[in-house]
Image 1 (cartoon, rainbow, N blue to C red):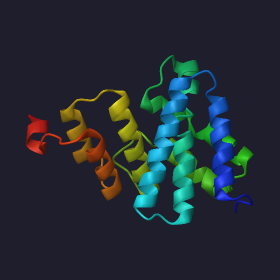
Image 2 (image 1 turned 180 degrees about the horizontal axis):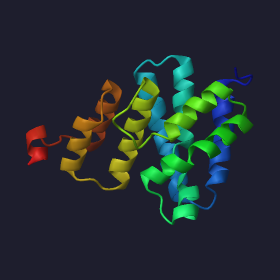
Image 3 (image 1 turned 60 degrees about the vertical axis):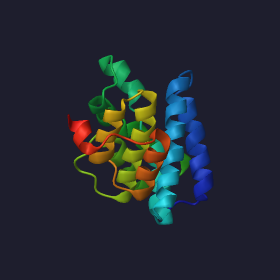
Image 4 (image 1 turned 180 degrees about the vertical axis):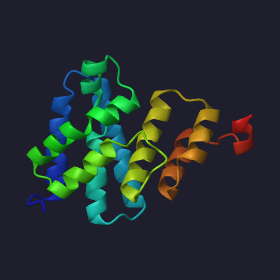
Length: 178
């Protein structure tokens, strides 16, 4: 059980993660956007406070494995992020004061946030959708790519609404498959 208020835990985690990625404004901007979308999706879907806190913490640290992956492998593929992200995430969350149980769930989410066929809870779903919202924009994805992601990934009403609002009318599923 955490002894600090959720807002304080998230504030301290955000500052630690910014320090972790110091000098890498692109990565910092990315996780801040993912964290904001994750919060919006979780609140829109009515997640309970415990799940919401886990989601928001995971969104802040979801890409913590990027720098370790680049150091170890010279690249930051999703597989390497999932391999190398959980341990520094656990350490950072514990330093801030998150409970061991929450540290483990967040580490699991960090270690699976590029694995889309085993989503096991609303925190996982919202995290994946938030990351997709940001990545689709940052990668300048095509309308067909956005439509394909909507069909394959998005399940929450809030996530689909955000996607549709951000990117406007998308090709139909048949057109996206052509």
